[in-house]
Length: 475
Image 1 (cartoon, rainbow, N blue to C red):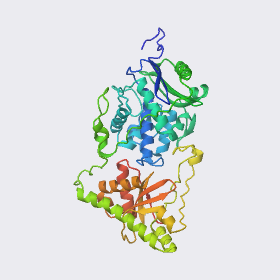
Image 2 (image 1 turned 180 degrees about the horizontal axis):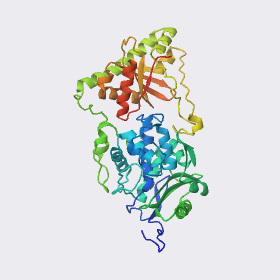
Image 3 (image 1 turned 135 degrees about the vertical axis):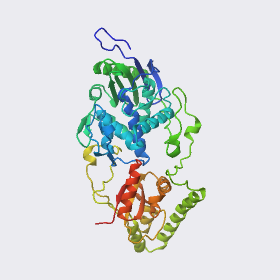
C-alpha cells in the first residue's frame, strides 16, 4: 500500500466485484492479496451466529454471561460489563450494526466457550466455503498477527450470507436498532443512504487495514457485491465501492440463471475437532464427512454401541406407543393425557421472536413482548400432531423440565435429545425425553424432574455453551 506525502493511504489496495446471482467475477484488482480484514471479520462471526440459531445450538433469547475478556475489548464497543447477562440477539445487533468488538467476542465465547476455539470454527467454515487465503485469529477483526484475508474471500463470505441466510441478512440494512442496553447506530449508514439499491453489508477499519467495505446492492433482478480493502478514508472508500457497483450493474446481464453458493456443512460434535487445512489448501472430503455422534463427557466411559442402539430403539418404540394410546383413547381422554404431559411455560417465557421479516432478532417493537405462549388441543388428532413422547416414565410428583431448543423437524429434536442424554447421563438419566410441536417448530424437552434437578441440568448445559431454559408447573 502506498502512502501520500500527507501520510494518508493512496487508492484502495484491493478490489473485487461479482454478480451475486452467479458468482461471476466482473472486476478484480489484487483480489488474492492477503490483507488485514478489520471488522469485515464480523461477517463470519455473524454467519456462525445465524447458523447456530438455525440449528438450535442457541436461541436469540438465550442470556449470555459476559466475560472479562469480552468486556475489555477496545472500541468500537457496546459497553458490556464483566458478569453482565444480555440476550444473544442484542449481541448480534451490536456486532452487525455498530460493529461492536465486545459483542463479537461475546458471540464467539457463547458458541464455543473461548475466542480461540471460536476462531478455529471460523477457519473450518472458511475452508468449507472456499475462502482458502483467509486465517481468522479472533471474532472481531482487531489487528493480530496472522489474522488476514483477501478481497475475493470476503466477497465469497458476503455472498454466502446473502443466500444462505436471507431471512437474517436484513439486519445489515438497518441504520439503527435497540441492542438491549442502548440504541446502536450503523457504521455503514452513509453508504446505505447514498447509493441506490444498497442494502448491506459490512464496514471495517483499523490503522493496519485502512478503510474496508463490502457493499451489496440490488436493482430489479440484479444484485452486485463489491469489496474494497485498504481505502484511505470513509468517503473515498464509499465512493470507490459505488463506482465498482456501477461497473457491476453495467456489466451484469438483466436476466441470468441463479447459481446459489453451496452452503457449507454444519459441523457438530467430533467434526469440530477436525484439523483446519493450511491456507491455500481446500478441505478434504474426510473433514466434511465426520460422524455427528457426540463424544462422551470427560471422566465418563464412552457409551457402548448396545446402549446407543437401545436408546435409539427406545425413541421409536415410545413414539409408536404414544400414538397408539392416543388414537385408541376417547377424545376427552386423549386431550387430558396431552394436557398432562405438555410442558408448562414458566411465567415470563418469551413468545416466538419471529417477525414478518423472518429474523429472530427483528425490530425491537416486534419482539419486546414477553407473553407466554398458549397451547390448545381440540381433539385426539390434534394431540397426536402436537407432541411426541420420546420416553415414557412414571415420575410421580416431578413437574419440572428443561427445553434445549426448537428445531425444524421432529427428527432433529429427537436427535438432539438423544445426543444430550448421552453426553449428560449423570444429570439427565431419570428425565423423560419429549418432543412437542408448537408454533416455533419442534421443542426438545426433558421433563419429569424436580426444580433443583432442572436448574442443575440447565446450568450444566449452559456452562458448555448449550441453550437451555427451565419450565415448571402452572402457578
